[in-house]
Amino acid sequence: CGRRHPGECRRAAGTCFKCGQAGHLQTDCKKNTTSSTSGQADKKPGASGRVFAITEDHATKTS
Image (cartoon, rainbow, N blue to C red; front, top):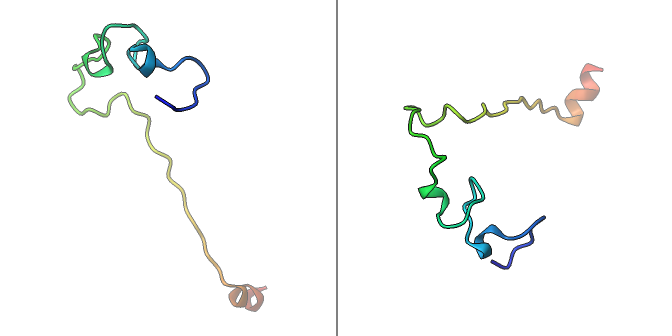
């Protein structure tokens, strides 16, 4: 595929990205489960954060 990989390229070898077996693609993998109805049951919750911004002028006035 032309990209750098830490191991062998699964795309060039023709193996599944999910299970690593040859002969099928990830969309046809038998390890895909359709039991979850929401589609996000297996995903980890995303990180949330806060950003506080202050100007230099405001910092000198409040210090």
